[in-house]
Length: 139
Image (tube, rainbow, N blue to C red):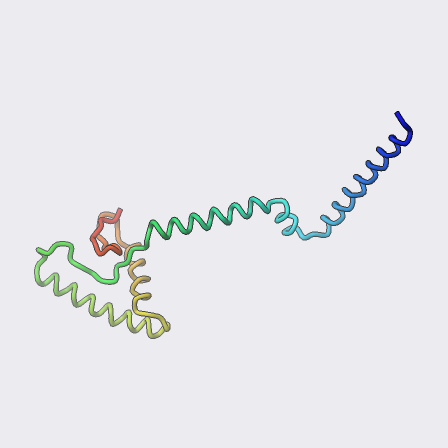
């Protein structure tokens, strides 16, 4: 073995150690958040992409249900029941208009939010009207 080769190896080792020391000292001054981002950057980007795709899929394939109006499931309902439903819906629309004016939003937005809340409160087994304007039994 040539004495110059051993000196080169020593020099390479010294260079490597110097580089590692420099990296370590630079990393020591990085905030923890930046060190985390550097170590998990690809995983972070993957998670963001997966979350974006999941949100798109949920909103595309599972549209929200709305219940802006009450209704009668059967056309054979008594006239008094039908009239009661019409009265309730008229009063509801007036109240939605008041709320929309107070909050500077549209009546449709208030009705959609109220519909979501009403559907959440509806017990399973009851019927709710979906966005396709068909009655569906809530599960």
